[in-house]
Length: 138
Image 1: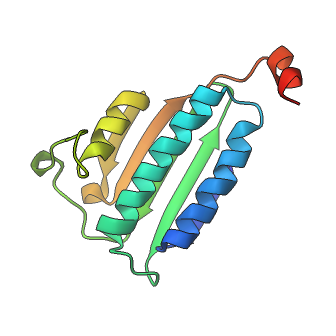
Image 2 (image 1 turned 90 degrees about the horizontal axis):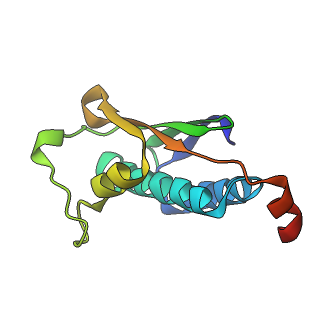
Image 3 (image 1 turned 180 degrees about the horizontal axis):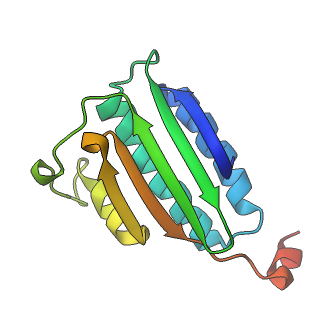
């Protein structure tokens, strides 16, 4: 699913299945640190869309669009929620709440919120795993 869109029902199960599939795809050819960062950021963004946007209502949808080229993963995640005021949210990485913004700041080379906070678009740098290391794992 690294080059396409998926519409997920707003359920924990659907998000988990998507993330496990993504993990398998990222593990095939990307450096482990980059694959970890990509999964971490996407999980966090999906968790926020699930909890705050869709409010765990499986009748709502979360749309995920991913494109990976040789150097970056470009992603857009949208939900059907009410959105939020970014100015009213502050990152608190040491708490249970607010760590998503800190994670985006740390790992994404670019991130923006659109459509009143219902969509987050971001880019993550990705480096292809050298062929010599790929054969060592296999």
